[in-house]
Image (cartoon, rainbow, N blue to C red; front, side, top):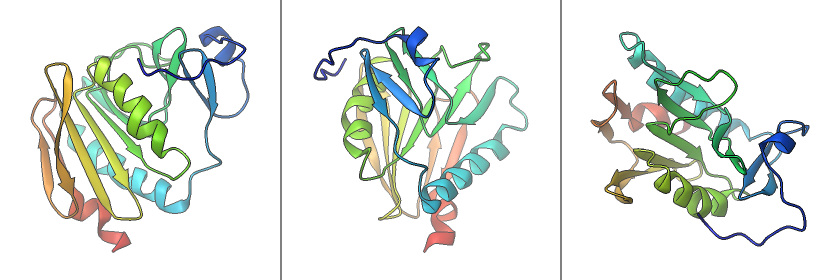
Length: 181
């Protein structure tokens, strides 16, 4: 787990579920989410969710979700922008590692997404972690190999096949980014 500066207070899921607003909890430390994401953030998330969702018609085991709680442990609850999860049965929050997690980077959350969440998702064995950079219209894809992520590349106009997913998903970044070019 990443090492964060310890807060005076230590919180758990029981505390977290009572809070108003959008929060994440990492190792008992509460982290406020940014104000509502900018329009490009929301629009990119919609494009990616739509692109993934249309490929799941024949796959009843998997679903693509936007901003749902992922309860890693009692003191670590994250809220990925997008997740592809398979075989999840809990209705309140994710309990299993998603196969794909997408975080859309903003200045205020970049360090959290690129460092802390990266390390947590890697440790939790999320198969693919995608960081999307709206300003550059670029995505970085990381694939879990053994116990560590390897960078698969930077994607601007290319497609990528997520071969190690239950439903064999593909993302076409030319299509995802098309309306913003």
